[in-house]
Every structure is written in C-alpha cells, then in structure tokens.
Image (tube, rainbow, N blue to C red; front, side):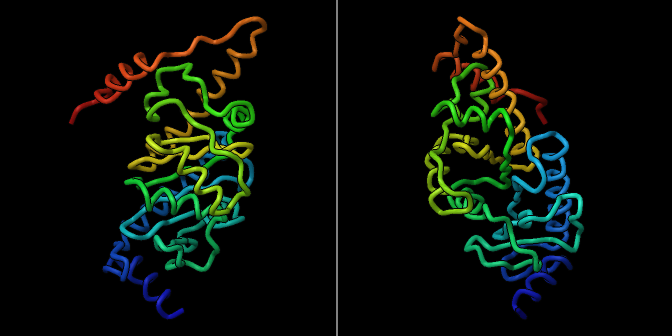
Length: 236
C-alpha cells in the first residue's frame, strides 16, 4: 500500500515516479479520458457503464474504473495500472476489460484504446466474420475490419481473439459484444470508433434493401484510398 501511495503522489505532483509517468501529464490525460468516456454515452456508443477507455502515459495505463457512471468521475478518481496489470494509481478497481487494453499496449505502439458496445457495430458482429469494405474509410483502419470470435468478457481468451483480429488493423469488432479501436492519441482512437460504427450502419442500411447487394471496394481501390488518406489534412 505504501508503494501505491508513493506512485500516486509522484504521478500527481509532477515528479518522476517509479514508472516514469509525469504527474501533470497524467492529470491532463485523466481529464481527457473522462471527457472521452462521457462522450461515448452522449454519442450513443455505450449505455450506462458499458464500454471503457484508456490512455498510456509512459509505462502507466490510465483506465476507466469498473461499474462507475462516467458523469460521477472526478480528478481524485484517477485509476492507473502498470503494463503488468498491477494497480499503481487510485483505489477504484479498473475496468473488467483490462486484459484487452493491456494486450493492445504490450503489442502495439498505441497510446489510447476505446472499447464500446455501439449498436450497429455489435449487430454486424453477429452477422459476418469481416465487415465488407463498403466505404474507402475502411483503409483508415488498415483494411477490412475483422470480427474477433466470441469469448467471455474480461478474459485472456477474449484479449487473444482480439489481438488476432487486430493484426495489421487499428480496429476490430468483437462478436456479440462491440468494438475496439486504438490510436496514437485519444482523439484518433475515438474518431476510429465513430467511423467504424458509421461504416457498420452504412452496410446494414445498404444490405437491407430487398433484392440488392451492396457493392464493395476492391483491394486495389482500398490501397489507393489508403495512400491518399496518408496525405489527408493540414501539413504542419
């Protein structure tokens, strides 16, 4: 317990703790994490306390706590774990989906992860093993989005299934469960979640027209879109 209090004090007061995460940065990251978690509710991507959000600061992962409504989270509720899963910040238990979040951080260069139970995406996860590439934004996620086979929530099995579905991708669907995306920033991870839900809604809408089958993009078309997307936006 003394070690946990030491880590928490170091992270909050701006000195270097045993995990090297600066306190001021952790505080700002927690504020952004709580705002993103609340946005998942406002945008209809989750209901109640379902879904979870995390950010990585050094070797510390800040993550939403288990079973706490996001509108009740305050600065003192900061919750953080090391990459080994050991809690180093706060007293609230971290999300039950911690194995998925840690698996992403251990195997990719991600700095943020967003997991939701978005309705259209979850519906698609029950119908196909891969979301058909009905829109060029598929390329922004690395290619056609795979569906990770079902496993009980919060288990290592689910985390392993997710990693296989994520190979070469920045997002995947979780069968009969929801979505998971990651990014180099929290905004990027969130935007990818919103885009994935939109593409799932698009496919469901198009495929529901009687007697018609949605056209899908070819590998070549996706590759070309991917090249153009790499140069998209303002250059600094």
